Image (cartoon, rainbow over all chains, first blue to last red; front, side, top):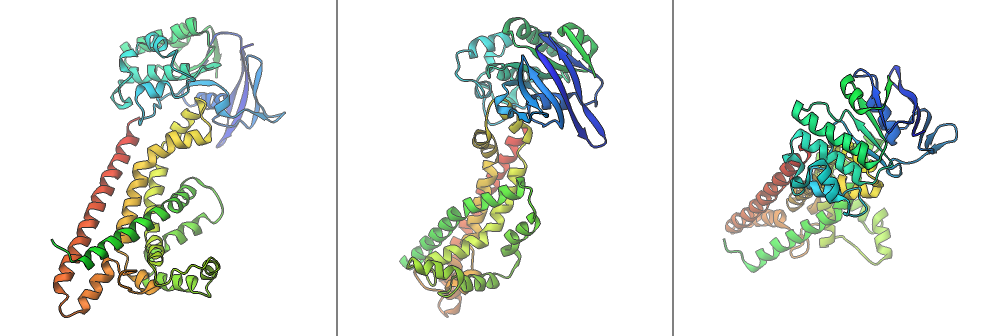
Length: 200
Length: 229
């Protein structure tokens, strides 16, 4: 089992969360806007504490409310690509990419795979939406993640950019060997990228 | 504009008092700003109010309270006396008065800049493996730094202009506590002091202007950096 997730939190009047298991290298969390898909990713990443449940990834327990286990976010090794790129505005692309990396030996191949090698000396504010998204994916990958969390990585991109980022994700899925948990509300995306679909 | 050697001494003393007050107050102001921006604790409103008090209380009252505290039999004066130190009628006392009066402005500017840091960026850094301290040093501090510096410069300008609390607390001792505003006040009392007032007032306006422009420029930088996500 790659993902064994059962996380629930109370947000206002409603219970937000998800329960699923998946053995697929690319699992899609699929559902309409507003059901709390991003909250589920935050709980898996450790950025929000679930009130109950557990998170196990490839057999290692990151959170378990019954035994009190709660691995802090910085030690979960989640490669989290947020809905907005969240690049550090005061650091150039190269420094953003290497923020979580142990060294820079993987920089060149990763940059080549994502087609961002020509952007390394730029500031985040000068990037287009698709470029920033690919840099965010690269930054997550270079931190040597145990798994990737992608939160609507294709939203708010025009057609050309979507195709760019989609291909980058496929390459990550097929070449990097890192399991992916991705949130989307687009059935087409879910079909194309995912081998398992969890409906919320 | 040519100043006499005594007047240069006054300018030097003012810069020394203002600079020392700013440097000494900076960590206190930052800690307060941090607590007010990020902390959740009972009495936060009270702490906020106390930190802002010197801004609204008559400076004479602040000076008088400092005098009570640092007098030989006052609570802080007694502690200092153990170390054989007294700040009364000394430039160090002027530093304390200037620092206390500059504190609210510094806290306010720093608090705003800390609050303006996008917490989501901190989450991103955390997910990339950064612990609390690394997040602080590499994300929060650099992003709030322009605002923190702008607050410090503003506090410096305020310190240089301090009058009421200083003259009440440490009196007007030439060469020791007579900073620019106090010297201008003394010159105004002298029948032949007109020219000196013009010169010292000019220097005083120039220093304030430079500090304000620097503070504005830094604050603008802070705004720019944070909007580019």
